[in-house]
Length: 421
Ligand SMILES: Cc1cc2nc3c(=O)[nH]c(=O)nc-3n(C[C@H](O)[C@H](O)[C@H](O)COP(=O)(O)OP(=O)(O)OC[C@H]3O[C@@H](n4cnc5c(N)ncnc54)[C@H](O)[C@@H]3O)c2cc1C
Image (cartoon, rainbow, N blue to C red):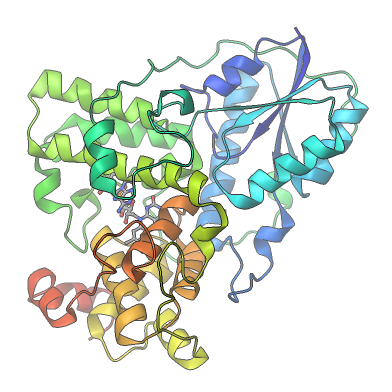
């Protein structure tokens, strides 16, 4: 038994949270979330990492977590500070012996952890797998030997099993007596709302409702047939935002797919939903191997791309003002709602790189700012894939815009809906 600090990051839930279960085995437990001011400052690509859509979703997720923790006799301390600064102070004031958090996949979060460990070598730091289907020790590849292609990873990973999901804890140990750092309330943050009514509501409760609704009827049975549609909330699962903020456990989702298959009978579509989760899995574990290369212009390619950064061209893309109506519609949808279908993301990204000849990293940073479902490994990994500098044996993807328009928006409905014709 020890005095533990649990640092919530991309794991804003109680259900199937093995890190929280581990932390529950403590004499006292301090639960902390840090809203890092750096998220709101412009990055080297011009926009802040956290835009209005994801910020709205995050605040909803934190409010929901506060309610759930209250029910198990605990309290969430929300701090408006860089984790390293905030956590160091809390650890020393409360004589914390152990810090537990979810495994971190982003470079910034990893460096926060490294900083903490250097500053407080006596503090035990434990990272637990809560974000992936598989635990690190179950990945049959060494850290630096991830397959160079997704298909090779998938051939193996399809056969791996996952550990059973855990129920939410019924109670948690009390917070320590001291604490001392004054927390921030959610209402003290500037109310910054997305401009449109959004179907994506942050939090574990909303995630569970969405999970039940998606699997209540026939939607999973036609997933593979309609997943490439540009529009329509039900044409893909829309699980990504909850998965990436950790409001929903990806293992819980897999178990739900398996349950549905047992009950209703599986088909190509239910299988494909699982296969898409393996893409997420691949990008996450690959990011641990590629480290800072994930953000390099040249990535893992032998040659750097021949693209450049030209402010006007890049901004025309961000502002949905390119010569390509289909791309403009995609960008309007992204900017207005914080969501874009996978096909839409591919079309928009390919246009920035191929038609407009721009440096892919600026596009990735714009997506980072806009997307509710932003995931560092998946976003930057997919951009690298399209730019031909990532996990891609074919050297990039160029989507023919006329063909895509003919295939996915022959009657112009999508372009009209998002105001580009
Ligand atoms: C340039 C670009 C950037 C992207 N950025 C992100 C991002 O930041 N976060 C993110 O979650 N996805 C990203 N994707 C992948 C994909 O577009 C989204 O996961 C998907 O559109 C989310 O909607 P959904 O949950 O309805 O997906 P579904 O089609 O229902 O798929 C189910 C789940 O599988 C996973 N998945 C699906 N497609 C992919 C993919 N291509 N790569 C990895 N995982 C996938 C997601 O977790 C998704 O929730 C990006 C794709 C591109 C081309």
